[in-house]
Length: 210
Ligand SMILES: C[S@@+](CC[C@H](N)C(=O)[O-])C[C@H]1O[C@@H](n2cnc3c(N)ncnc32)[C@H](O)[C@@H]1O
Picture 1 (cartoon, protein in one colour):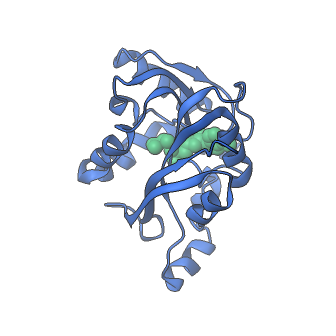
Picture 2 (cartoon, helix red, strand yellow):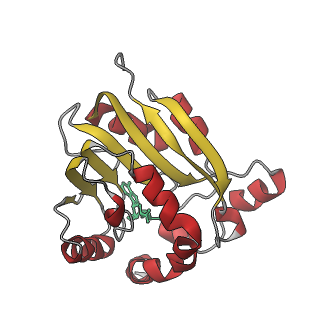
Picture 3 (cartoon, helix red, strand yellow):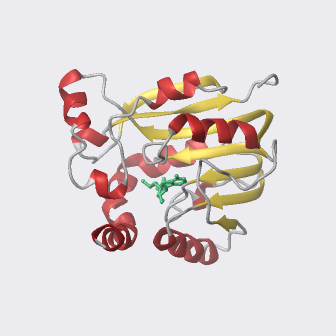
C-alpha cells in the first residue's frame, strides 16, 4: 500500500524534483546524447517522457517501454502534447515485446539503476538491436570514491521505495554484456543528491557476431 502510494507520488513529483537538474544542464546532455538516435528506436523505462522533445527527425519509429502506470499516464499526455507519434508499451526491460533485431537504436536514461537484473536487461536490449545497432546510455552510477560508495551501499530511504540502486557499477555491467562500449564520459549530475551525482553517458554497439 505504502509502495503504491509512493509510486503515484513519485510519478506526480518526478518532473518537479528533476527540474533543477534539467535546467542546470541535464536537458542539454539528454539532447546531445539523443541526437545520435536514428531509425527504429526503443527507449526502456521512459518515465514521464523527459527525453521526448529531444528525439531527432532521423528517428523513424519510436517505441517507449514503461511498466509503471502512473509514469505511463504522464508519458502518454506528454507525447500527445508534443504531437509525438510513439508506441507506448507496458513491459519490462527483462522481457521486451519485440522480435529479434527490431531496432537500430536503444535508449536507457536513469533506468538501469532500477531494473531487477542489469545483465538480463542488457541481454534483452542486445537481442532487440539489429547487428551494428547502438545503445545510448545515460545513468547515475557507483562512485569511485569509497566514502561515497559506502553511503550508496546503504541504499537509504527513499531509494528502496522507488526500486533504485544508486550503488551499481553500470559501466562494468555494460562491458560484461554482449555490447561493445564505443564511447563513454564520466561526470557529475548537476543539482543531484551526493549519492546520485556520479554519472556516465555514452554509446555501445551490438557487434555483428553477438
Ligand atoms: C528514474 S526513472 C527514469 C525515467 C526516464 N528514463 C528519465 O530519464 O527521466 C526510472 C524509470 O524506469 C522504470 N522502470 C523500473 N523498472 C523497470 C523495468 N524492470 N523495466 C523497464 N523500466 C523500468 C520506472 O518505472 C521509471 O519510469
